[in-house]
Image (tube, rainbow over all chains, first blue to last red; front, side, top):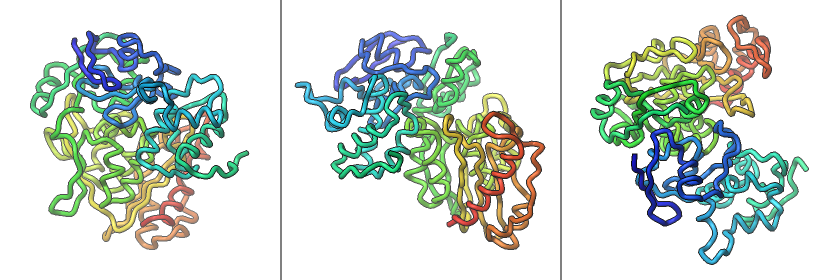
Length: 160
Length: 261
């Protein structure tokens, strides 16, 4: 079957099967491999993208269900000239990644949070990241990066 | 995944026709898609209910009930059910933000996971489940683990919630799955208190009638002192044994009474 949608501002279309997941259409159909598949069981959040402005696990929505939708992936977050977004820059500045595999999902989740809640508390950030798993950082630097990206003073984290 | 077709009807009538023609309803997919990925289901055709305006939205009816259409996503209930704050709070804590973007009330109720959040809110509220064929009282709807009163192909159109005087949903989370290990929804109405528990029993959501009687007489946490929960029907797994879950029922019920508003 045919599917058409807008990905990072560009109109795209392709032939898919009913069972084609959005993440497979993005990665294999459009070669946008920044969206990662970490678990394939809908638990890790590495494949997080925005569908019509709201965060979705791209492995838990069929490409056919995104017909006509506006999709933003990690490739669409930085400015066209390569300037990193505030969230991306904060992840770099605060060392919010180690291996980097979860980072696309973390950045998409954090960007979604700050759009709805520009000044989140540490607890709100942790609650929002419930569906994004990182096995390297222990999360502290991710929390710091998101606090910094929201323009807030970064107090010492309670767990440190 | 096994191969299947997918249809995206835009009217309820078209969806009913597609389901009658052998299709299986796909709502938010937050349980069904992982199930398909694990090859635990093999439908020939999925019928997405996501693009049907008749199945979305929140309103208040003439009896003051909060009415939520079946394909309304959790995030919309969290943001939009301000007339029933305890229910909005329940929706705001289901799964994670991505699950709340896609998952729907109708999907949760049709699935009836024994640890899902919505069944507790629906049963404690004494809500009415409206399908394309009939109205089903919550007390008659939940029949056991993953089992409901729905017939084959029956679609949840709307859920009507009477709004209690005060209510609270207290959830002790299982951190890996984001499902409740045990969660309790307490709702105090003019004519009595209803208490529904999810996550605890292998039979799925149930009412704790002994606690309801005690709280209807005296709506304080202390009213639950000494009321024993039978541990025999409780779930036992590596996260908690039967006695642990039975104890949590009491602890979470007391917290819900204390925090009800």
